[in-house]
Every structure is written in C-alpha cells, then in structure tokens.
Image (cartoon, rainbow, N blue to C red):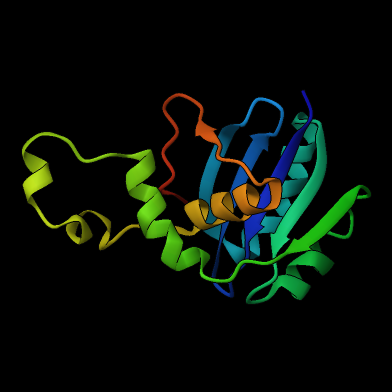
Length: 145
C-alpha cells in the first residue's frame, strides 16, 4: 500500500511520520536531527512506496522542501499552527494514563519528551481531516542522532 510522509520541520530536529491514509494507520513516528532528514527520507523511499510528502509550514519548511527536491512526486506544505501545543493533548489520547499514575499531574509525563513526531501526526490528521491510529509498538519518542 502506498504511504505518505509527514514532517514537522525544525532548525535542529524534525518530527517524521510514515502513514497509510486508507488504513488510517501510522507505521513510523520518529524524531531525528534535521541534518539527518534528507538521508533518512532517501532510505525510506528506497524501501517504501511513498506517494507524497507533507511538510508543516513552520520553521525551516522552505529549507526542508529544497533538501527533498529529489522526491519527484508531490510535496505539500500545510499549516502547522499550534501543533506543538496540541501535541501535548494528543500524547495522552495515544498513551492514556491508567492506574495510580492517574493521580499524578499529567505534565510530569511529558516534561522530557520530544513531541515533534506527534506534531507531525497532527499535521497529517489536519491535512486528511481524520484521526490516525498507531501501528503496534510504535515509540513516538524515538530520537535518531
């Protein structure tokens, strides 16, 4: 099945999601250094059928788009306003707190989390106007150096 890549661009790090739209499923959700993005996408499109790349229109989106000009299919720039803020709420939808942890303030659970992958997911969900589910055992806090 063809997949899409969504990127939450940043100066130092980017969130990246690999998803299949018709299944409404996310297969990869990672955070990586911005300087590694081009090589990572090149490797990904060599093993996956990717139909389009969606890039948030925030910080460094123009530079990221230029780096990905080797991708000869559709590259879309899409609104990403407030996605970092919204990622905190979406995190708890994806990873609900249960048991005794419910008594601890929620903010404690996301203090040191890189939520850029969840921001990329929100960009995708806003673009498609639907919610996606995570494939089994995805760790959206992955950090590629």
